[in-house]
Length: 238
Length: 268
Image (cartoon, rainbow over all chains, first blue to last red):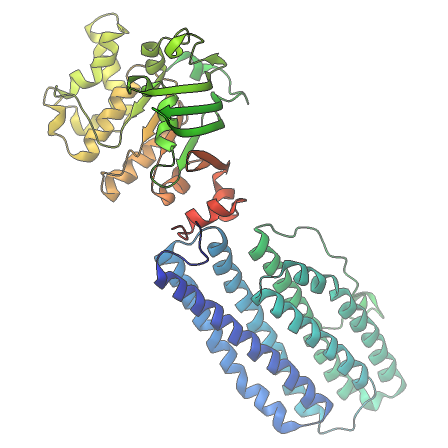
């Protein structure tokens, strides 16, 4: 009979270590995004500074995952679902590290924003942040519980983020044209919006890796891209 | 080079097994195997001990005929020609002696004859009289040793005993002996299990070269070897073939849970 465990127990222990590191890293990345959004919403500069400081913890996790995957590949020569687990972990860790970077970046800009009067597109930005937080929590849950269906559902919702981003882009442009004094704040908001939109893209990558990890197949179909901001006003958002 | 190898590559499989069952006395060792062996490829048969992979390999050139109490049913074809005939004991198919010339075999333990290196390789061509004169036989021996990657190591001592060579050299000598009669298919039953990694590497490299000319079927306990050398992998378990597929697919995303359990080391 096949058991869930390997005949060599230490192999299971090493795979579990990798899984636990990913779980810990997922938790950290989620907290970083949530805190960055909260710091922005509540104009909390202390919290924003903490997000910037804590980015190093996520980097450490990624370093550990990288070492552990190289070790597993070299010493265990994993195949089939074990191989897919190791490869997916390596790629998901890279996405999580980028997600935390974007969160830290948003936190850094919120420190500048807190020195100026609040501008109204902030409300839309916070809404977009909430959506991305939900998607990230969903996709990480799917990855850690090997749920391909749930991952696909997240992947199909990235359009919502793109739609919000495009409309936010228009809103910010309009706001700046109406009142040029807000240009500095609005520019920072625009970059933060881009950070959050990128986090949505990384969540999509994680959804695709989850699908590969569970099924062994890659998702090759092109998702429709709905972010149209690149074509508006003859101006690139970033 | 055999005539078959000179023919243009077609998609038709070199050998086909249909519903092959083997009894050892009352014990059913193979429970109806269906497998196509593509020409010009290495097919690896993997599975735990006693799963029937060696039994199946031996069906392909009727080596089971020599085992008392063994009986084979179902059909095996070589280029569409039935290997087993309709008569008692499978008689009426391809003559087993000619069959074993077309479908050679190399065993787990190197088993050179207690003869010289030259005579080991010349043995097959001599009994099948596949040569015209002494220079022709010399040429056949040289070519076979070259193809087996052994010529440079033994060309100055062809008249020393084959049994005096190292394990890896003896195994390559056995491969040269199999090649010398111009086979179309070479069966290998765990050809590297008694060899060190360097000799194993040489045999694996050799398999890769040989598949340009011959069709290879290997039985191996080393999953990594199957992954390295084969294009098609079949997984056997308790006398059944559970899954067959492209090697890369079997080792990244097998479709059967049993295959997955075996190759990832979760069996037991």
